[in-house]
Amino acid sequence: MHRPWIRWAVAAEILLVYTGVLLYIWRWQFTHRHAWILLLAGVWLSHLAHRDTLRDLGLALTNLRENAQIVLPLAAAVYIPLVVFGFASHKLLFMLPSGGTVLSLIGYGSWCVAQQYLAQSYFHRRLQRISRNPHFTSALVGLMFGAAHIPSPILMVVTTLGGFVMAEIFARHPNIWPLALAQAVGGILIAVLSPPSLIHHMRVGPGYLFYGVR
Image (cartoon, rainbow, N blue to C red; front, side, top):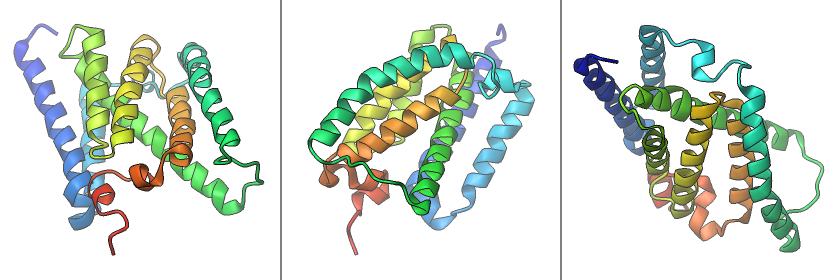
């Protein structure tokens, strides 16, 4: 990208969309609950304007194997000790899942796909157009991902670090599906193993601050 004004335009787009995401978390979900549709429409229009393909966005099967070969062993190395601790502390139990539990898991997994799509397919891709340093770009993705989880202390730390690592992997092998799977499993473990007084049922924004207030 040789024309500086294009980089400024992309930076302004990133700032506008990210501000919209934060506003939705902190206010619009209570005052304009359908505002997310406009935000998503803006992201899709951006894809059209930049001529992004499914492969570019990491939504195709391309790079799936290469991505998974990094993500899955890394996730296993982190999650297996947590699972062992969970069973040892009786916070995890063997149970046959009910229909409602399965639907909840599918819903949460879909939400993780949506988060990785925004974090990697959109924000990471746009940041790559204004930064020539891939590690700096990954760090920005991690910071943005973590900031979206303020003020939850556990989620802020985990999503900042996890966002950076996942961005590093996405930069090499663009594909969001293994990333979303790893996030879903990690999120479930965090929800189960974290102290309820700190995790507040995985809520962020005002939902975290006013959790339990009636």
